[in-house]
Image 1 (cartoon, rainbow, N blue to C red):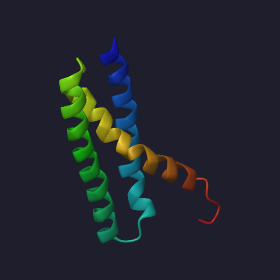
Image 2: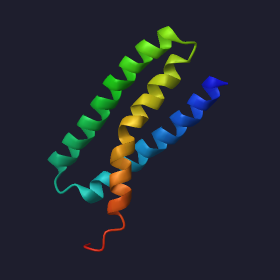
Image 3: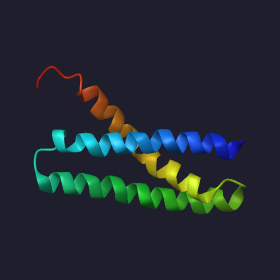
Image 4: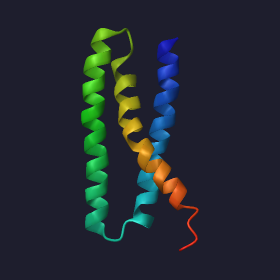
Length: 92
C-alpha cells in the first residue's frame, strides 16, 4: 500500500519536474543560465534522490527506485510553484 502511495507521489513530482524543464527556456534569459539552472536542479535531484533511496530503501520496505524518483521530483516542486505563479504575471 505504501508503495502505491509512493508511486502516486513520484508521478506527481516527476510531472512537476517535467513542467519546470518545459517552462525554463521561456523564463531564463540566456542559454548559459538555462544550462546552469538545469544542471543545478537535476544534480540536486539526483543527489537528494540517492541519499533518500539509500536511507529509506534500507530502513523500510519501500521500493528504492520509487523513493529515488519521488525525491528527484520533490526537488523540482518549489521551482514548479514559482514558475506557475510567475505565469500569471502581467508584466510580460
